[in-house]
Amino acid sequence: MYLRIMGKLNLLFLLVIISGKSVAQSDVRHKSNKPNVIVILSDDQGWGDFSIQGNTNINTPNIDSLAKSGAQFENFYVSPVCSPTRAEILTGRYHPHSNVYSTSTGGERIDLDETIIAELFKSAGYKTGAYGKWHSGMQYPYHPNARGFDDFYGFCSGHWADYSSPMLEHNGKIVQGNGYITDDLTERAMQFIEKNRDDPFFLYVPYNVPHNPLVVPDYWWDKFDDRTLAMRHRDPNKEDLLYTKAVLAMCENMDWNVGRMLDKVNELGLKENTIVVYLCDNGPNTWRWNGGMKGRKGSLDEGGIRSPLFISWNEMIPSGTLVNKISGAIDLLPTLADLAGISYKTKNSLDGVSLEPLLFHQRNSQEEISALQGQTGLSKEELIYDNESDWKDRLLYTYWGGRASVRSQTHRLDNDGGLFDITKDRGQNNDISTKLPDMTRQLKDSLLIWKAEMSKEINKKSRPFPIGHPNFAYTQIPARDGVAHGNIVRSRRSPNDSFYTNWTEIDDKITWDVDVLSEGDYQVELYYTCSKKDLGSTIELSLGSSTIKAEITQAHDPPLHGKERVERREYYYKAFRPMNLGTIHLEEGEETLTLRAVNIPGDRVIDFRLLMFERIEK
Image (tube, rainbow, N blue to C red; front, top):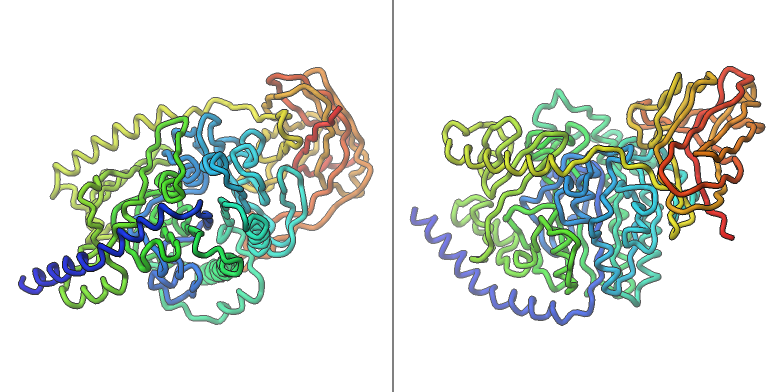
């Protein structure tokens, strides 16, 4: 007992010594001139996929450096899957408020009455850019260029099947990528930094790795091919070691690319005035080492939604700061706006709160914690101390697919009503709900009320896909968003980057519910493949009273590609050819867009990937 008391006294003494420094740093921060902000988001990377978390299987020195030079949040939470986390980052609100209810076919779109973080920064004079996986709506006005981003390069779907010089888009126009996708996205981000070196900028880099497919250049794979993995999932029988190695190789490549961005910031002399944020969008996409936590991607348990959050701002946020207070993706918008000194008035009230007080009033670093652990015998959680008497403890909620869980500062109530003391049982091994009935009842009541509110927010009534927004020249209408009729089937279970195949009969067709936003003439390109023996089909595209037809006269029959480190045929793809389908006149209003064949001389019509509408300016 004496040792524990003395340890706490030593800690308080340490707090007094350091407190003056933190106040000074806070004062300096407010004199800073519009700091640049870089937000880096990984896709399907788990909390444990970093060497700073103690994982000896992997080396991530560049991402680790953000935590070492700034702040590391110990209890930061996101959603179980991709699109809801993105909605919460971008809006500062729980994703059901934005009507995000799925990861594809329109359910990933953020409602138009939401304020997006880029809009706030742009209105404050920032240049804004996004490079990577958007996954919050494809057609304008859901497109990133409509949500505050001046420049966008990447893709808008939930996943991409091709990682090697793939078809991407740049501000709505389809372009060809240049090399391995993570390297390419980083090049674009660095060009943005260089171009805007003399202006404040907000840069969002939502990488799409280590999401499937498991494709990574040989250099990175060779580092893991023969490596023995010492750190394993808590149930090793569930783990596919080949899969784990591929994921870790992709993560090390991503770390190298983060390092390249940080080097660019340093090279341009921007380090002192640039805030860098790193986080993941959900738990790991496979069973692998994740700190012994329960669950993975898709789960509402700790392992499915706990993410690292590293925030670095050179000489402003104290090096090695550890934050123990619970926080989440909903907090990023108010936090970054506060750090940048931007007043934020959003269309709807925020669920998140600014974490700024925790960044500038934390008093103990990783090194100090380690030393005090040895002196006091106290746990890491007991020693992390924020010294904020006015910080209000709160509850953080998670919702997905009708399931919900809630996290207090110390406990988690899971979807099945189990209660776990996370400070002592991060792995959720011991249900203590019967031992703490009052706490269990209180959390259950709170969760039921919150879940009922969120359920009312979700409106799955069809929102038609917009075509022809007056402020944007391009509209993609992909196979992902269509409905197949007859024999036509998707190329894979997940709609996101799928194409339609097995088009064999006159009665087969593909339809989309659309809303034409401005009347006019539109040039239409059809992306297809067709074997030589099946040439001659006539394709008809119709909307209301407007119809165009074109014959398939050129064969284009490339093989399926998609060699992965782990065989998964779901993610195979092929290169699609654009064909000028003609010019169609569209009138404003909601209608059904229909693609059909009016004659089929061969066994099949085409395999179909997407339609691209481009407005013809008069």
